[in-house]
Image 1: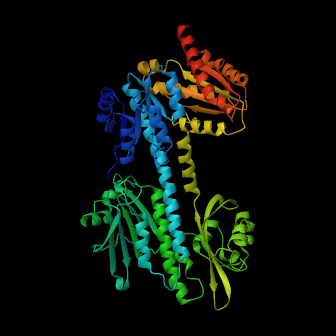
Image 2: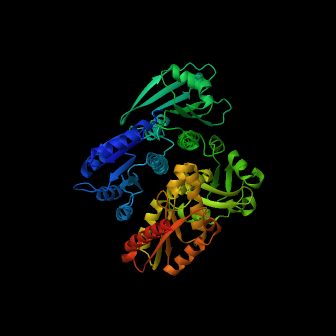
Image 3: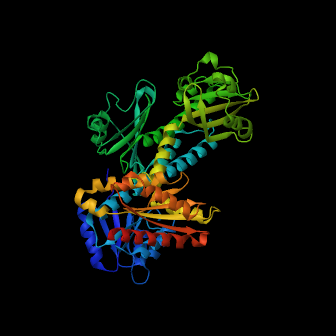
Length: 581
């Protein structure tokens, strides 16, 4: 696996400043790219991958603010963190940077520890955002692929090998920057007389090269003889990887294994190799889903050709699946359905689906699916149901349904497949949380704060009070006690500030020691009361932490930008006043 080196673009018309940043960043393993002006910076962002953009505020021609605005106005580039380089006390430019969409600021002269800490934090946030976006893109792409396959499914003409080719083309890497996709896919299929056919697919730029080869697997480590599907994943750092017979055999075929995700039964296996990052359970779930669909369709096509009944079809499916008649009574349910939902055949077969399990399946969303959607659409994919089941608790189930018309008796049956996506949804919630919250304090981050400003500007929640806060003495604590103590000081300040405001107020950490609070529908007296509560708390009185505040008030959206500026100026006046005491 080739781990991508973070690439940082330094934009400054003073080559000396760029050289200082490069000397600071390059020894830490970062790939530093320089640009002398705004147009050159935008050209480099368009032509290569950029992970962070460091922008000098004052440049001839297009200044740093305009470059930042152009980055944030482009959907393809807006996730690139923009960091404005300003002088230490350049308040006005900091406010302009916030308005332009900058995520952070670096003050001149550069503090090496601060610069590296901010870049590390922003790279982590960008990585989370990129992973979330990539996950959504993969889900959308595979859902569309599944919809096409199901829509065009005809058991009489279904070609499993063509389906496998199409599936591989969907999941394999087609561009070098698609690190969430595998570089190589290996397919193994056991045919007649236990002869095994091996296919290898290699990513070649935007093309895919397909070839056949042989593997000497006497003990069949690629297949699971128990007959039940199994999904495994390895990373190069895992101890199991080096000892795996499958990995050793693959490397005999000159396939170096950085990581792999494998799906296998006793007669079929798919091995996806060499993602551009460490593989996780999410990748295993994706492979499991696409393979199960193809195997299910192959099984379904073969069974429908031979018989009108589905007794032997659904047991080939790993996920819960039931077959219903046109009256919504259950004809067949697979073992996975019984084990997942704690049921028994005698309480299920022949029963109205809404009545089984003490009526725990009498779900409004399920009624909508059966009574309103399926009568008009014979194929339903990705129908989500969130329900608190009596026996197994709250689950989020993804339903795929298909109506099949049985010509000889003139009636329909309904195949209903279910996938428990509760854990996946929880992971998505976690990723969304980290994309909008500051990692150190748990408060909202700058990106969320700026989006909330935009929402407020188009809302009717005025008046709005704006509070700016800054932790005093953070640099002294960092220098004298270390950055761990400084982090604790920031956490303490964040907790004190959060506890003083209402749940509906927006409390955000927008910089290293800077916080911002929005109080929708509240005048400045409410904000001042909150500040008085903070200043009277034990941590402030005892001197554990000192915080400077500034308050301003906006009666309409036209005053919001000015309120931000005014609250920041008042905060700095308060900070200066506290220093003189």
